[in-house]
Length: 305
Image (cartoon, rainbow, N blue to C red):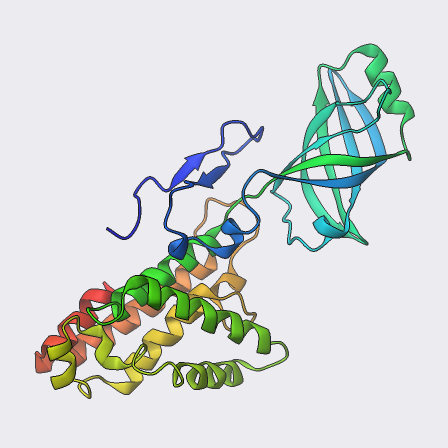
């Protein structure tokens, strides 16, 4: 069993028009995207909140604010992420008033967001309207990220690597830990490099991992690996490795995650479509190579399927 089939849970406490999901706390961390693991879903940070605009609309008030925080500023927040902001005004009438916001747009030192507050008392509504251009210091911000196809691509990449490489000599944990380390190193040196240079760097890194990423690893038994170590198409094996690392990294021009839509959409994200196309090509390649009928080739087909 690789994954818990109920690995996603609806976050019912998050107020949003579209459902927001979080991962199960007991999920396998190796198959969980780093963007889900760090920072955890629904964690609190603190920011100074500058009220930019207050627009009463019927029984609700639309509020536009700037969140200024050195910590939050480094997060890669997206427009559909949900943030619960609680105003801090000790002794003031607005102290403890909270609202959900979204539409995060980067600004110097943080993000601009917009939200709605409902069921305000008349005196609270008046105080909030008067708070325009006022800063509330050290307000709690509960951050609930929306997880997109990027997270699915990461999980699929780790599943592919495990299917290809885990055997009786190297377990799933070893494969995933090494792959994560290679992915981090690749991302660290990829800035400004062409896709060809990134691929060359990846090939160099994998060559230093010994037998871990060797073609024979696709066979589970050591006896089979010893007798069939050279029985893999080098081009096909390299294509499989490149595909896997294009799934578990987030590198512009190389990773499929950089092609996906950031906003929620009913259409299939580009990264998923390209993945399916590449998998189909690899399957056709492997099927042609399978006519020789050797066990190693059958294992490779099973992993890609």
